Image 1 (cartoon, rainbow, N blue to C red):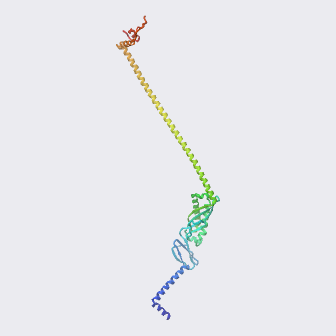
Image 2 (cartoon, rainbow, N blue to C red; image 1 turned 60 degrees about the horizontal axis):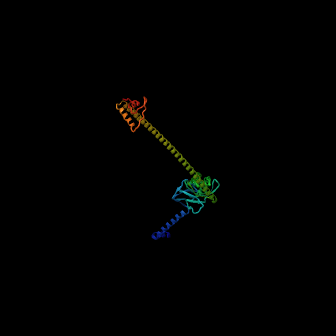
Length: 353
């Protein structure tokens, strides 16, 4: 009867009813918090996947639960979480390189590599990888970050040592050779971890350091190599200069030869032109001389046949006698009398009177 009276009093009193309601809510919230903190639920964050494992039924589930999600575990049930985003493994011993520990990044000491010529080189590298099959990782390696300690780290170090160890110490200065070696390391590492559900995207060599003694030797050798290359370049330049001078000389000789050949042709043409001119001039002179001779002949013939020829001869003979004061005449039949014009005409084969 007393309990019934108490319930009636609670229902009749609104303050007590509100207090009872608040108390129930608080107890419910405490129960929920207890469930979350006591392991009865698991929160799968974004960019994570969970593999369910039950100790009593079902074992390990082959289907991964992708976050974000809040899943109920229950007795004997555990969700093992694995990242789905790109993970970073840094091999770096130097401080201040900007490497920070996080859920997606881990840093381990630098790697020491023995080059093919026996030198020891300290390598700072970065491996970028992804988990593509959480179920395989869980079944073949185990939960948590065991995939780093049991697979990625030892196999990554082995792949880098084998690939970079094929280089000589001075080959690390060659970007092409260094990148080719890191690509070989990436391919070898992928081949070794693909059975665990892991894929390696990139392997990067960020820094390499020689021992101080060897560093000095390398630098000195590089300086000597540069001097050798400089001397070779100068020798090659001199050879090219000599070849240029030779080509110029040969070209000038050809030019001179062609010039002389042209001058010879010009002289030949001039000589032929002069010969032709002289020949034509001689032919013209001959024609003029022949014409004059023909005129003289005609003139003489005209003198012989003309009626006034005797008078002309007489006048000319009179001119001969101009200024003559004394004449010596030969007597007798064979004598010549210059005053006898008929006799003179007969001497010149001309008819007298």
